[in-house]
View 1: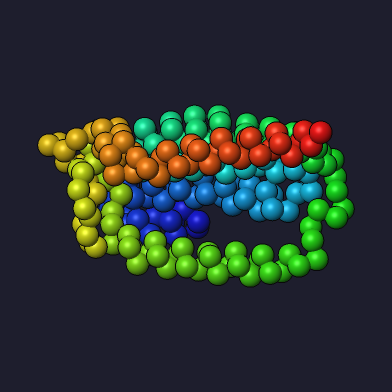
View 2: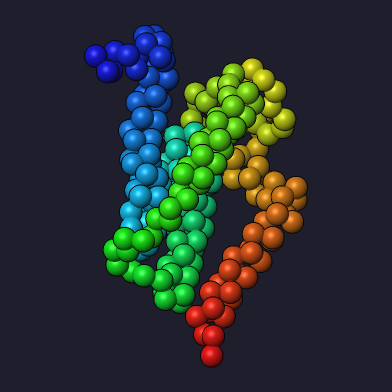
Length: 200
């Protein structure tokens, strides 16, 4: 019954859409569970480990979208570097590593309200911007570079550049400043953790 409903979403004559829908669901369920555990667990280290599951799911979604380079970068940068930075920060600041009954503050409902508002805004923005854009059906071709409009098809263009070339050109040209700012921010966070830990 569930598979039949999923098949109805992608079209009975379109097995590619059906497999994409099923794959998205299989990846999304552990991501949602991991995201909930990140904010509900009372052990900070466990929260970081659940975050690894969420980030790994995001990398798998990139693979599903035929963006292999971004998936590898997701694993190397976020799982391989940012999570390690989080763990260093937890250890250097002498945070509680065990179960802490007072970890959740009494005004948590304010944060929950902000989270719901952000979810609504992000959902509206994504649907409004990419509601009509299709996932590329030909996995062996490159996604054409350029500006996408509403209703444009992301199907592969053999004359376009590769995904890796498009991402690298964007990072080191249009988004170079933002890329370097993030690097400085991570370095400042690590230095701040060391300063807090070594008050003497």
